[in-house]
Length: 602
Ligand code: ASP
Image 1 (cartoon, rainbow, N blue to C red):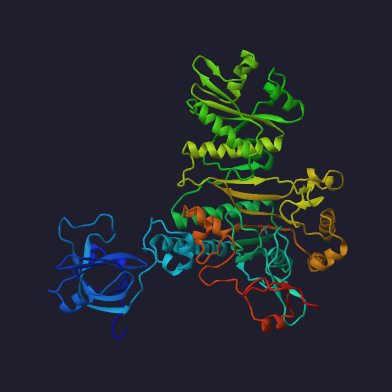
Image 2: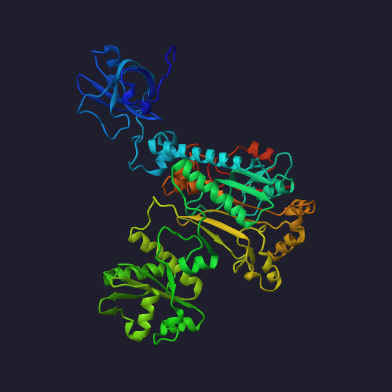
């Protein structure tokens, strides 16, 4: 660069800088040739500024400007001037000024980029990922990268002020059960053995509590080899925390304060504390989901008691069989056409509903194909329970409880979308507590931990572990934001006997337990303090803060749905020599350049 030294960022220049000589370096965003003058929008990560090349100021610089193409990397020296009246651009932060170029230098040329580097343009995501370095040059992507950095910085500042220590835990480790498949790494030095990449640092952070650390956190990469349906990544980042000598309330309290600090510092948004709380049961009953979106109401109401004895067979029978009749008031949707109602019913079918009953509240009474089965008193009480007014549409599902909750939970979101209630500017946090400790997997014919096997049951429910394990509630909590689960944690088991009991309920035999978790059980025998913690999904959190709808937009180098990196081409084949070194032998070749593996002999 010789003697050139950059003095300002393009986007930093303001009208107060008029008269200053500046040296700018950045990328050519756009050029416009107006015959006698060439205008170049110069871009760097701070923003864009207009540079004017005039032969009157410098013939040499003007000639260089003629050769510039989009995305060339250039250095420009010039004077900041106020734009002439009438040419001020109110849409550009630097729109009141421009820079008159005196000297220019091309630092590097660029090929025609496969897409225009600007926000709000439609580009195929595969192309964006293949040329991620160009995609990340876009102002919106830079905004997100910066917001993510500011978020982790705020997290560290806050937790530091609360006495937490950031401690790294191994990436090459043993399996940590979080309900997913492990990524395995073969050990060259221990033929036939494998490390697992951590699904979370759960076991290490618990061991750190036994080690007397008391308050730990880590912003940490976790690995889960899942089928990448929905918005998941094989590697993702958690804010992982653990504390000793705390109750559930204390962990939840620190987490809330942390989140409110982050939202205030990064977004300037005030979050009301404490967050509302729902038990798992309430969440399912009132919102049909254990991750309810509380940006809007549209609450589910149970009318089983009102219609269980009615003449309408579908409702009466459902209640008789132990099921429920529940509904939602689609406020102001009384003008839905028959066609629209049929479409909704079809949609409900895809969520598992056997049907969808509707009633429209009109000035003269209720209009509905099923109205005739109810007495005027029954209709009145339904209206009252549903808080229905003239012009409302009431939608009902009669089914066993779980199915009804699922259908109505989906219906609630569908209606919110139609009624424009999903406001991206709103942030509605909620805690879900009192999850069941266990669920029964029909598929595997055994109990499974709803969170993970280290979660403590509620003290007062421990006696049910043998007789009615499904009734035992966990000391677990999830934090949900706008209908997205952004974190979860629990108070842990810290006694060997209870932890062993939990493993045996989960169907693990003592040899397996010893092999997998022997070190943890042993640690529990050396003065393990009571402890608990939580992990927040950093990618999801930043996604919501950035008002995006995929975590890929807030990860610098994400993978595709099939787990590949389009930039580097990972995963890729390895050589037979490498396999040999790792004591792996290739199985039948799968095709050109592809090798499938079987585990080598010990
Ligand atoms: N280890 C848990 C997870 O990754 C979080 C926790 O219990 O702290 O989901």
